[in-house]
Structure formats: C-alpha cells, structure tokens
Length: 344
Image 1 (cartoon, helix red, strand yellow):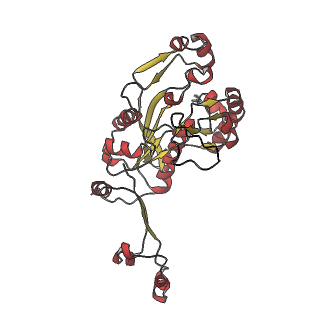
Image 2: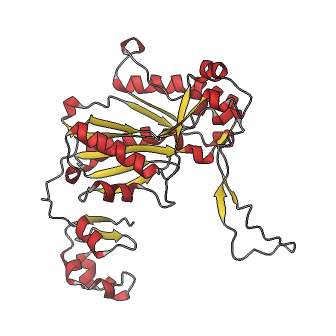
C-alpha cells in the first residue's frame, strides 16, 4: 500500500527541463541573476510518496480526461451503505460475565445487542461492503470517484486503510487518506468532503466510517463493554449547484482537556519486558500495544449535556434555522461523545 500526493501551480516550464536527480534547491547556482528573474514564474511542483510501484503510478496517472474543476459547488448525499459483522452479543450474554442485566443496559443506553468481528472478518471488509452499497445506491461507478476518506481509529493496518479500500474498490482515479477522530470521525470526514467539493472542485467523494472497537474493550468493565461494537457505514457525497447544497450549517469544536476522561493510550507489551535498573535507555525498544478503552462516563456525560445543545444552536444559527423548524435530531450517544460536533 502506498500513497502519493502532489501539488502543481503553473507556470513552471523550466522544471520539466531539469533532471530532478540533479535539481538542488539549496545550490548557490539557484540564486543566480537569471534564475532570480525566473523565480516569479515558479509556484510549486511537489510530489510526496513512498514505496510506490510502477503499476500504482500508472493507475494514478490514468487516462481519465482532465475535466476543469469547478469550485464553489454545493454538496448532496446521493448514496449510502452499511455493514455489520455476523457475530452478535446480547445484553443477556454480557450478564453472564459481568454484573448487569438487559433492563439495566437498555434503559440507560437503548442498546440491546452489539456486533463484533470474529473469525477471519476484517474491518476493511466491512468498509468495502458499506462503500459498495453507497456506490450502488448512488449509481456511481468506481472510476468516477475522485476521493476516498476513511474515518477510523481502529484500522487493520497501522498506516491506515484508505489506500487498500481504493485498490479493492477499483477507484483508480481517486486518491485516499484516513481520518482519526474517534467518535467524531464520520462527521469530520463528511464535512471535510464538502470542503473538497466547495474549494477543490471535486465531484464524487466516498466517505467511510468504520471501527472495530471491540478489539480494545475490557469485557469485564461494565462502564464500557456495554457500549462499544463494530460496524461500517459509507456515503457518496456529490457536487451539486449551490442552490441545492444539502449542508446548511455546521459547528465543530474540540476540548483536549477531556482526554483524561476517555482514552486508550499505548503501553509497553507485557510479554517483552527488559528490566533496566541503571536508568539507561533500553535497546531495542520494547514493542508497544494499545490499552483497553478507559472512560469516566459521568464526566463525559456532563460535558455532552452541557456543550452539545450549544453546538446545535450554533449550527442552526449558521443555517438560518430555529429549533422549531427541526423535525428530527440524530445524536451520538452522549455517554461516548469524545468530541463536540454538530451539523445541519
């Protein structure tokens, strides 16, 4: 898996005549009088990548016609899809291993069952199924997708899953990247997609939200194991005229002070410990893993009920709407709201 990104701001005709292996930006010859005169014409030509195979470069440089990008467009949702694992854990199942009951959980959370990955299932497979569903509903073929945004905090690969999804879907004209924003990931990804359409002239953007939080759940912790599960959802965001814009307003905030109330930090592997009593650095470094999810439910709840209404109010104000005009509120469970996000 590899990702390559580039920025090109013409005109820079002399760059094409220079062998890049011999091009030294810091050479004193670059500041000669003739080159100084040319610097007004130079904007930027930069490519960043790593480990890119020739056939991948060829895919990125496909024969798709270059259509001028139109900025200032609106965005609309034209397709959606979802996927869940096969294995289901009910509240009654949890009552067999922790002190709880179906009534206790359902009254406080509304949850009766949750799905978790099992066997050889992977998060990328869920994401792929959800993405295919969104494309089918939208009637958009993979070659017409311009960008894929994979929103996850639990990728199958440390380097992310967006590139693999791009390959598996066959979206040869798209580039892809991952967003890590915990519970807010999908909302952040959706708003990011609309900004690429409005400011970058993109037409079709696939936004995927997928997580396998069961991998980091302490199944003996009643405060967290009743809440988390695994699933994937996807939407196809498409450019439209500004008059048809489906995103009327949004409000985004983060409060890093709350990190101590909801986290899953890294820790040294317990299976590879090397005692060092003289204070010297240990080499080679110990392998690290993530701890289980740790949450102070009461503090997260207090934050949510205090700040979420304010965020909704700000989003409504930007959209030019009132509370009375809203027919349906779709809210994240306040018990596990890590960041504060609202959109209308």
